[in-house]
Length: 483
Image (cartoon, rainbow, N blue to C red):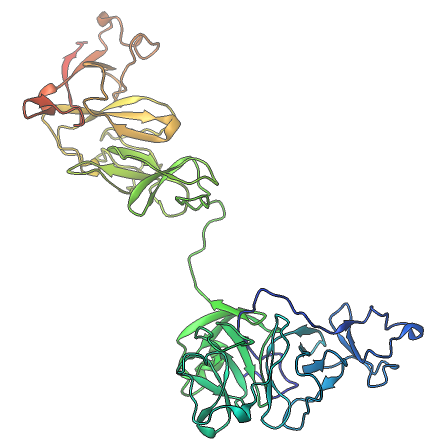
């Protein structure tokens, strides 16, 4: 355990989340009135808190600063500004609706907090953050032989088996007031007007259960055996205490301490909502292909075609692309790279450089998506990465759309040209555009002896005696100029 009793609380923990409302009552500021000037002392003020969050003790007379309060937990009456004694010897005095609670560390810096405190013999009060003050859940009036399973006890006090006051952490687990240590309120809080909420970290001694505003830790070990919370090495050395979960706590507010692989600083998050931070690429979200255009705008569903889609840089697409393959249905998946410097034996694959191989030739470096061009790809055998069925002496057309960062295989309906032409000496088989220079100029006139001609095969797209324009378009070589 981290500490013992009232004045040694810096290392103690409490797992509770606070309500959003602020404190309605607090100590008077030492600068209002100015407690540094004896001539302006307000003798009705007995304690005040300065700009450094240190509490000054002006005693019952209010005329002499006896010093700054040390490490400990302090309860004050808001009306009189007097401190109240904690424990069985304490006395509440007047109003019970004006209590304010502070926790001070070894550096004498104090923070206002919430919790249950004992002021008198077995007489407990709660101090809340939202300004409702303190009521009296008088422990002597609590039902004997009580437990936490009534449905309204979690986060509240019970008198368990007539053995004394306990705080319900869950519907099956509680901690005794005289058990020094640090505990987590795991269950959903159901008690009436509780000072805690779920996942508050609670320090407990014989005199109080409070939220520890002074302690923050990256990782604490929670034991489902007894509800205790401690650092891992102490848990390891505590017989009977398991370590069933880890929590990160900041000023009494705790949350599960999860571990994930760090995301590179320049990566983005793809989302089908305005939380999307990716742009200029594609992502697979809920098994569908999405296009992410602009950070801050939702990625939108893209109807996939057979081919390659440049992936967003979210750190999960090692191949740099999403590959969509044909078949009964077009399915998309994260592409993988092959470790290779060229395209030898790697038709249709992505090599180390990130380029796409449009042939299987040694020393060929493949293509990227920088320019909108079309390429004839040998489909005489199956192209497994794209789900394309091989047909004897046939080629398919890969069309690069640089503006939209994709390269797709054209269907019969998308290929408007019955004949396509290439330079027979071009290993990439770049389709020449009609009437352009240098692509068409390089193979024209026909007498230049560099032209190769390919014709679209209607029979490969005939289904039930009609052309199915959605099928992949196949081309065959019908002419190659002789040298």
